[in-house]
Image (cartoon, rainbow, N blue to C red; front, top):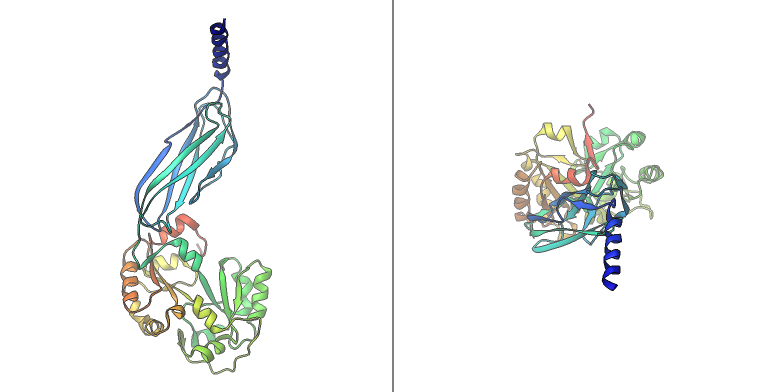
Length: 347
């Protein structure tokens, strides 16, 4: 009798699975082999419903530490239907380690309500003169000169972007949502421009106390291009001293050809070209003489990896301890952030 009931129960369970959804995946384990630290690993798992009824994802996929997945574009799959699950692993900080990361997919598949996917591989350390797009974004600082164009042409800080105060509204569309340091001539208009930007949602806006005159008063001609400013600085407790900007200073050197730079470049990047570094050496050598904490962060960028790597090694050999080449070049920036912080030529 017990055997009979066991047979009946087994038959009922078997019938209940007929017409049920069943989740299948292109591969449960993706091994990316070996990549350099700073490369973003991107893989698409293909999820398919190989069952006989509609499969529903009961929640969005979850991940273990160190990777992210884009939300699924569908909440259900008809029989025979598929959807891609894109998973990204940020390798920054994992150099020298073999890593294993998990992605959990939840559905109403009665046999596998939680499917575990694996992304694994070895992350080789990047060189001491290299850093990732992730760290470039983290350290990104824009220096915004709000003086008139004639004053900017006479003198300005290396790498500063000029947007006259009266034209600031025209820049709302392309200014990056990043930390900005604003300076004027001597502390007259910077605070009012900063307030305008904050009202537009630019949350991390700082003003250089005393403007460019305050910088010269405290740090002399350090990183100053052109004439010395002789105005008397007007200091404000709501602004930050020149030493604070010096600690945060970031310079992006773009080593691509001029045509590529003009087509699209990071806001604030200085076009150097493949052979133009010599024109900046006087300023950079002065920076190398500063204490390490007052040296600027310098990111050398190329489309891939080439001239920028050589330049970063050269700059570090000069004593610029914060000079780096962008791992994977600007293509790695685009993979992560698209056109964020990019200034594009109008069509």
